[in-house]
Image (cartoon, rainbow, N blue to C red):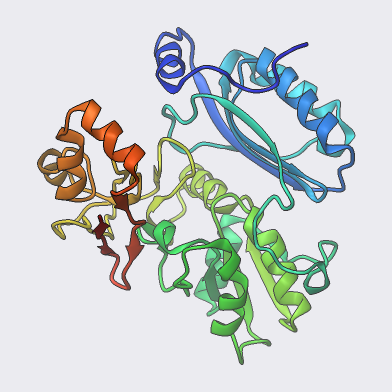
Length: 343
């Protein structure tokens, strides 16, 4: 029987990726569509895509599919053909990466309850009644005419890039986004609302949710910020999005404009490079400049940097003792983390 999950360690996978002699393309796609027999579908997709050397993270649920992947450029056409052979995924739009890079190093296909974890009742939205999809030019024109822009992403994403004058919910989890967006828009039910997110998937359900709750003119950016970037670049349209578009892979961001709107969480200098703390027991996501990366050895704090300097045996002893705990980062309102270590 074929192995239906990756069994190689990260170091091996990264080494194999570095030895590839072909070009990879990073892309994402989603579709809200009724799916049945998820286990069989998940296994079939994993085996089929592994043969095409696809890497990435894919979620399937009864409500649809959400995929972010990397694949050899020479397999892109065949991948499209095989996807189109499944009626539920035929002609699904691809969002091609704005900037390429080493995005994924293994293939993960998981069965989920939702393809976006909003965790709201099905009685609060109707996916047959979603907002109008706008092109980049239509989105810009609506902004110029006074429409309200709401960013349907988490705070750490919007910190490095967002639309000018957008309403940005101060939340860190998708489960909090819809209720907070509705609260911030209270009293604006008759105004033109524009929703945006990375690739469009979060706006689909968010627009259905707002329509269900009485908002009359709900619109969403077609293809999300990724497609917006391609459209403004190809048509020389001025970008109303500034900074970086955060992405959920090893690149951690695609530059849309040269604006740097965030700051290093350690020294406060202008910077928009997200990294994961090099201490795997901590592994928090934060923004760090090159100077602080050198000073703290790519760690979020001196404590984490000191831990990494300990002999491996001592690190393992402390891990097993569970006496040393690294708490998760909490972003403050001004974008700086409050980091502490309990022991």
